[in-house]
Length: 144
Image (spheres, rainbow, N blue to C red):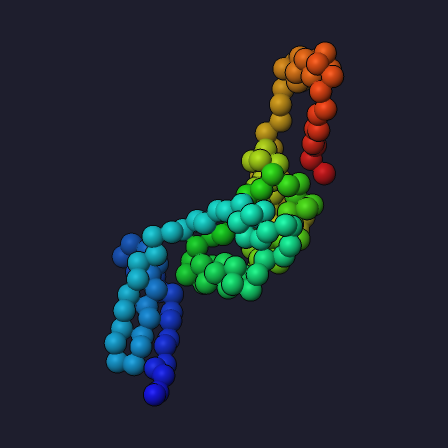
């Protein structure tokens, strides 16, 4: 049994700028339109379980998506400091969405903040008084 040589190339149509994957197997050529330009996913329980680093299979899938022209973004409730090492292990090059979407930062140093959504001071003060009156535990986070 002999195996066919498979060659893949990411190409761009000059007329539209759309990208497509050209796969050549022996004499047969197949084209696949890339319908996804952005892939965004959570880390915990999705790309890894229990806070571990991603499996080789997940890293390969991210690399394949990037090779096909997709931007791959991590979205997490974690802080940027915590999420960064996992995004780096995944080989991500684009932004990282952290704190449940409240802060978005670039992967490349100096890790510029692209989005920063903060709670206005007045509702926050009212909310803190409400929490304190009920003797509830509360965790608040700020940008690192």
